[in-house]
Length: 66
Image (cartoon, rainbow, N blue to C red):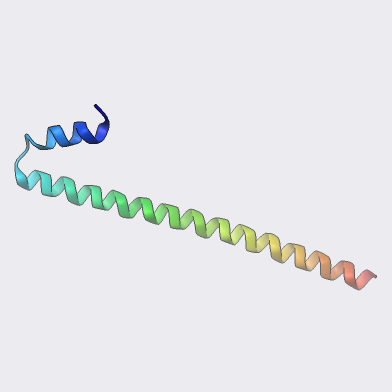
């Protein structure tokens, strides 16, 4: 039995109000995961931009030397 099935089996034994709380917690975890992914993507984009800016400056300086 995988984890999702185990959670489902256990949740069937709980009162509805507890299952509502579990659902809210799962939704919170989904949002938290999305924010973490978005933050990582933003960091990667920033790293790429920083690298591009450094390359442009380096190429510009090389052009001035020629």
